[in-house]
Amino acid sequence: MATSVAGVKTSVDAAIVAIGGKAGEKISNDWLIRGVPVLMEHPVGPLFLAKVWRRGGRIGRLHINGHFCELPTVVKFIQVCREATRGHGAYSAVIVATPRTLYSCLDIALALLPSRGLARIRFRRPELNALGDPEFHLGPMRLRVNLMSDTSSDDDAAGSLGGHFIQLWLPDRRIALVSPTGPIITLGTDALRTATWTHSGRSNAPSWNTYDSEERPAALIAALDRMVRASPRSSHKAQLRRPLLVSRVWNNVIRPRGF
Image (cartoon, rainbow, N blue to C red; front, side, top):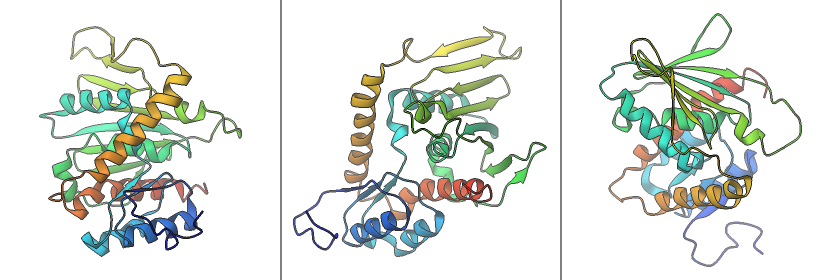
């Protein structure tokens, strides 16, 4: 067993860093400098990502806490929302999350933004609405974030599902992802003049065993594959734009609230 990155003498295709905080940043940084792609399991703040950004293409690729976007229902949600927003110059989204789920909620919500437009988005501090919730202007998206305390101090598995709620608002419909395994519910309005609500995606939820032993590992592998096999033509900064934006919003929401 090696006790440092330098102590690993064999060739490494990719590294998963499954601890957070300064220790996780140090280990990740050591792998990146070595040129090894890194998947960080825990959220990181924008200062760490800004340092990685400034180094440019001289380091390995980085993926952060975003493999929820590879789950089957989330893939479907992103697809449905991107199709619905096509042709709309502006739209809104709402996130209801816990401190545990906020980062992955933001990663899913910002995946709805057109990737070509990310370079033009300049992060600025949010406005606060009447309830004290921050509202961010991110290109065509106006994003409101409601951060709720976890209902239990126990690290029960339901906390990783129940703390995800993302809803896209368009003039004629609201498209909601109730959890990373679904359901996806579209609420109609009188402008749409169809059913009051429709259900998208599969009709039955996966079992806990399917979710835990099949879907989550497959999502993790898909994230690793995309990171390792990424086209050399894809610039270092292009692949960091969304993680950096996610991290800035996350940091701005979570730090003032003492979490």
